[in-house]
Every structure is written in C-alpha cells, then in structure tokens.
Length: 228
Ligand SMILES: O=C(CO)[C@H](O)[C@H](O)COP(=O)(O)O
Ligand SMILES: [Fe+2]
Image (cartoon, helix red, strand yellow):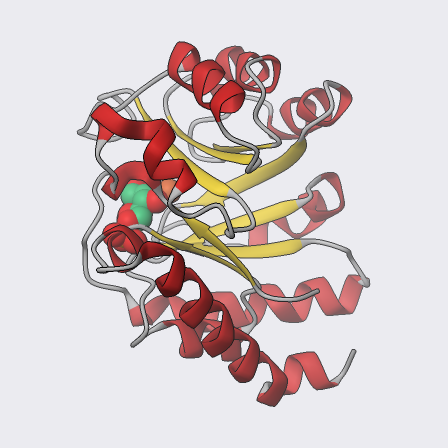
C-alpha cells in the first residue's frame, strides 16, 4: 500500500472547517480529533460537527476518539459518516465487541495505544482491526515533540503484522513532520497523521504532497517493505 497522509484538523481554523478540508483535498483521509476533556485534558468537537464535515467534504473522515466510554459513542461516529473510527484501548470496555460493531456498521475499525501502552497484550486482537494507531505523543494536544522512543514499538508491531500476514494499516500520530516521517516509515508505519506540519505550512496541499513523497521514498528503502 502507498503511504497515506492524513492531515489533522486539530491544527486548522475551526471557524472555517469546510474550507480547511478543501485546502487538503489531495489528502487520503481527514483526521478528526475528538476529545472529551476526560480521557484527555482538552475538548474539541463531537458527533454534530463530524456529521456536518462529512457532508461538506469528499475526503473520507478518520475519527480519532480520545474519549471515555468509546463503546457507547464510537458507533454514532460511523452513523455520522466517518469512514474510519479509532478508539483507545485504554478506554474501551470490550475492544473486540466494539471493533466488530464499527465494522458491522460499515466503517474501518481502528484501535489506538497511548505511548505507555504496550502492543504485546493485544497481538491476538489484531485480526479484528483494519488499522492500529501508535501515538507518538501523549494524546491531547497538537504541536508536541515527536517521541522517538516509540520507534521500537512501531517496529515490533510491523513484525507482528508481517508474521500473521495481516492486511492491517499502521498509523502514527503526533509530531509527524518532514524531520520525523522518514524514521516512522522506516520503522513500519504506512499511515501518517500530520497536524501542525500541514496546517502550519504556507501551502497545506504542497505539504501533504511533500510528506507523502518523503514517506514513500523511505518505505521504498525499508527492510520491512522489501520483504513483501
Ligand atoms: O491526536 C492528536 C493529539 O492528541 C493529533 O492528531 C496530533 O497531535 C496531530 O498534531 P501534530 O501533528 O501537530 O502533532
Ligand atoms: Fe489524532
């Protein structure tokens, strides 16, 4: 699969969301950070905004739920029009049941790990998922510095995906930029969320293209991709 770039609207102008989505129309997905001020110490947006955004843009929505009780709320984001819904395993009561429900409702099911959450206990759950998100910052805010101590976890996850022959996307989120995206691609990530690196750029569409080119060049040289 080619590298995918998902701009995060957390770094966009919230009073002009439809225009900001249009500004990155060449992106693969639009990353929508939902925060409830309980799971993380920040508050962003919810189901009604996702519903409006889904109507306003042709770019599929990748909803990252940083909320308590995702078992209760995640299905509503599928109904609101999200093409992919990510819940945090630390907050989910029944992650397998929830992933199955998201898929049954017609969206891609994805599970996120905070930086301190290991992948190993969840190896058996991977076939239930369409994407795994490894956070490369502590969730809650855009513009934070990339945690390079997450690179071994990305590598180990990519090895698990290969070992089991899974068709599972591996997303990284937090501090992904021109200076860090190549390390992520080399370690095994294939879906890259970028907020400040896209919306902080003079030309967001060009930033998406440049990041994608960098990621694809690094993937081309990576040993994990050569094995395929
Ligand atoms: O989930 C997130 C924060 O919790 C955001 O998606 C992420 O931080 C994107 O912003 P940036 O690329 O500026 O780090
Ligand atoms: Fe996010």
